Figure 1 (cartoon, rainbow, N blue to C red):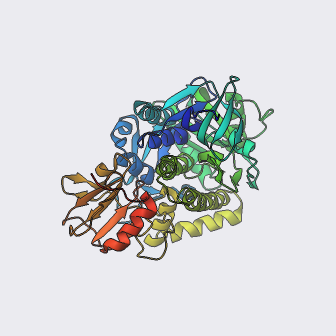
Figure 2: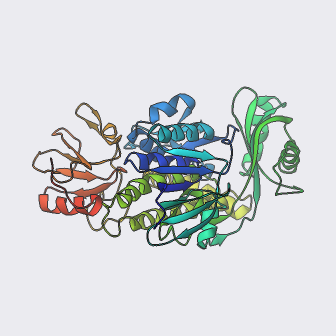
Figure 3: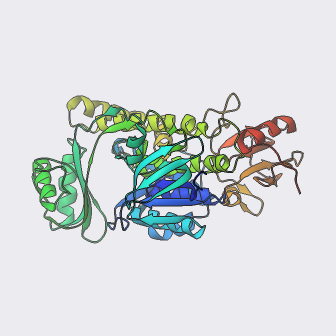
Amino acid sequence: MPTPFAYDVVIAGCGPTGAMLAAELRLHDIGVLVLDQQAEPEPYERIVGLHIRSLEIMAMRGLLDRLLPHGRKRPAGSYFAGIDKPAPTGLDTPYAYLLGIPQPVVVRLLEQHATDRGAHVRRGCAVTGLEQDDDGVSVELSDGRGLRTRYLVGCDGARSTVRKLLGVAFPGEPARTRTLMGEMAAAMAPEQITARIRALGDTDRRLSLRPAGAGVYRVIVPATGEHDRTAPPTIDDVRRSLRAVAGTDFGVHSPRWLARFGDATRLAESYRAGRVLLAGDAAHIHPPLGGQGLNLGVQDAFNLGWKLAAQVRGRALAGLLDTYQAERRPVAADVLDNTRAQSELLSPEPGARAVRRLLAELMDIDAVNRLLLEKITAVGVRYDLGAGPDLLGRRLPDLAVTGGRLYELLHHGRGLLLQRTGQLSTAGWSDRVDHLTDPAAALDAPAVLLRPDGHVAWIGDDQHTLDAQLTRWFGDPTPDR
């Protein structure tokens, strides 16, 4: 007799990607267990930036207002290779800013969102083995126990145990350089720090000291002379590296946190092997240029959650779950390429500096500036959903609609038919797709069908073609009650 399933989905890793995925699955009443090898969440207040698309995602699930009090807004603008340019004109979003926020806060709020909806989180426990068959996955745990689940998702970071157990290749380039990062106090006077960094800025863009509070700076510096790269970095490592690059250590002391990262760039050959999937850093790694890593992982989870839920509930048509890799892997490949390009532009070599100056001039052209900003913030992502208008496959902005804003209608993770005429129906899918008729909606089409991730799945005015797309994305119709 087969072992019963303890959970529908087990998620390895309770970082931003794993916590977001758990919350998305619970919107559809999927039984979820999230495992994390750390007994407690990381305590250090590392600041991350939530870009426009991630802010839109949080707004779609009613989470943005919870995050805003914990962060600081910075006006939207170009972050490409640190070239400062104002935002291009006419950004089609009310969230045209970068939200600097401590990563532990993001994880805590997403985890709370998931557990409030019924997800289970088990810390101090990790996946150590797996074996899958046609019906499910048998998972071995670090505490010696085992369990059965229908699906397993590895959100367990760059050194993903799940990916290694699957034997999924992780090709790319190994790290060529190492960089130290942290937040710490500095004894040197602020005006002296500013002058020194400005003097060095034209020759070495890899060094950065930015204010992060009263007397505290966020420091980024190329690592030099480290004795043991496997050990956590120390303040002495930072001082040594600062002196080598800047000629002074700025009197840094009392670190809040310290970390080390490399410029390794890798992309998993597959995001899925049977009933096991990968997301976030388990599927892709790249230098943190442009602050895209956390955002990319959260957006992976947002794409995967509703599709995996439909698969578990038996509503997904053949191939729906495979669209996760088909849509998200090219997005990751593009991020890897743009971080490769940014890395080259930060080189102190004369050729790279010349290309950087040329790009800075080109970014004064609005279309160039817009293209690069859309890459960094992910608002330019367009999934290949077949032939059709340019809006097909893109996210729909948070339009003003009767009674509020569009994203308020997506809090529950369902699809949405938005139309101006009232001639179309979602009968047969009303248990999965909501419906709003709004003659005043600022649409350049009579109607659009939105997936739960806010991307446009269909545009038109024909009920027959709408029904076909409702079936494609939400499964076969059921009789309305």
